[in-house]
Amino acid sequence: MRWKPNPDVVAQRLGESMVLVNLATDRILELNDTAGKLYEMANDGLSKDEMERRLADEYSVESESLRTEVEGLLQSLTEEQVLSVDGA
Image 1 (cartoon, helix red, strand yellow):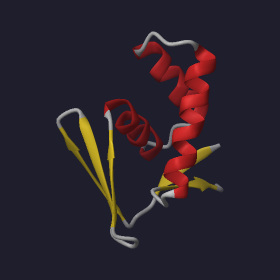
Image 2: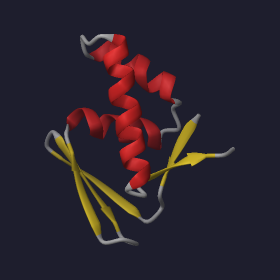
Image 3: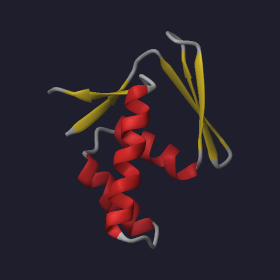
């Protein structure tokens, strides 16, 4: 499964944070560095498994914990209409 960014969302890195503005809903989200990286990977068309592998290579974290965190963040970003599941 892959995600695609909402074209109504503007993203900007600010130091170690990323700010997302959904122009359609007027919602503003601030993501920490790791969540920002996940958003960027989704924007690049990576699958959830590919995202998990990249994050596991970068951070020392238990795979089950990482999987849970990635799934939760992807669900939150989908609920916030920042990302959607790419049906292609």
